[in-house]
Image (cartoon, rainbow, N blue to C red; front, side, top):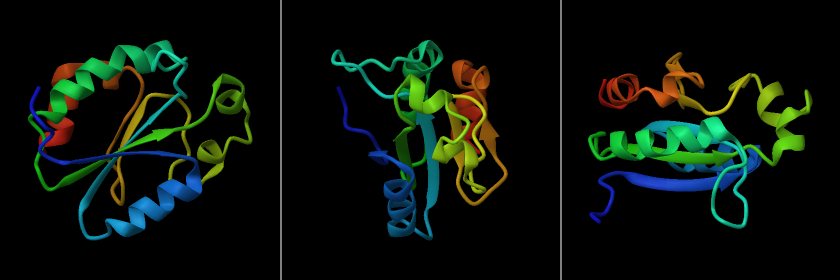
Length: 126
């Protein structure tokens, strides 16, 4: 398996995400929000599991100067809480997972779009 072209990071929690975004300021920062992983390394979120291979394939074609940040939004009860920090944060205002955001722009893909290879490919390469 070949190494990814772009920097790929994984963080948990809003404060860690904001720190990572700041560390890579000036670069294209693409953020994907998913549910927490179980002991088998799979997200509890079925839509996130469905999107994972599509996003992985699209990343192989994505620009090398993009920083891809995978963000864990919590386990199911944490995510479902209306007070979840990613739901209430004005920068993200998440309503569903998975969601992909080009940070600093209005570009975002919601749950269904994240499972469409053509849409994800276009999102990463535009």
